[in-house]
Length: 328
Image 1 (cartoon, rainbow, N blue to C red):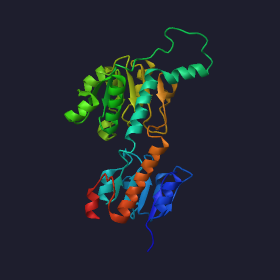
Image 2 (image 1 turned 45 degrees about the horizontal axis):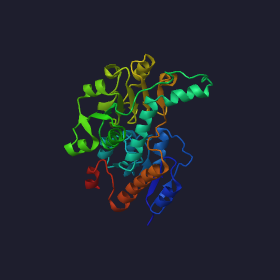
Image 3 (image 1 turned 60 degrees about the horizontal axis):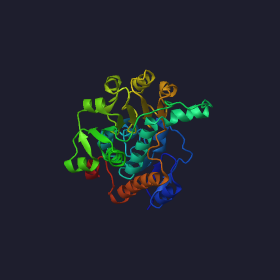
Image 4 (image 1 turned 60 degrees about the vertical axis):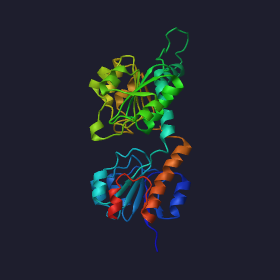
């Protein structure tokens, strides 16, 4: 009996490929070529499954051209590259990779907060340019982190991890807004207080965005929201591009209507709004919040386990549209 065929759409750990090859005929993309939609459809012909990343858009058009496709396993916790409704309608399972990256991403979120507050990137550029020739009392004076008010928009696993780091490690006052309020025990563990969205924006010294992307959260932070923030505040986005209006943010940074920003995600990435590249008071990183070798390997392993579990036993680990399981 022949093995099911699958596609690994991007370069991945060799040990992950070897594991998948025990169960499937595997086509890989270790050169990490960027495929057009038509090329992706071509690569998916005859494939029962695909291991994807956030760069691979799986929508109704792709699904219509891939009648053999049964599962797409995202190597990410976010899945805004999936049209989940269209996948469900076609009977294609969607999975993601939650939990395994929570602590690593929370570490990075807090590191980005600190780099932004203390102007680390800005001061390094100054030093590298040979401009450091004297000491001044206000040279790259930034914002306090310890004891400051930490605001979190989106209080899922990663948001809770950042809250704990701020509250327990830095004595920060933590406030948050979420679609639904956390239970009292979790609030106590995070030392976090639920507030309205407006109070969050007005009160936070450091505002961290950790909410999932959806049409409802598109440009959740735009010109109007930035206008509510303190001129001394920082904004950190480790969620998804599109949640922030990058053009409005660049203008607010240029006009010093907020102090600084730290961004790991961008609308339309890997393209970055050109205005963000010309303001000094922003820390920019290329979507690397989960980028440690152990965590990225765990993400790849979970995506592989979803493919193996579903295609061999009808038992995926982290289904996003479990209704598909009932109709298989």
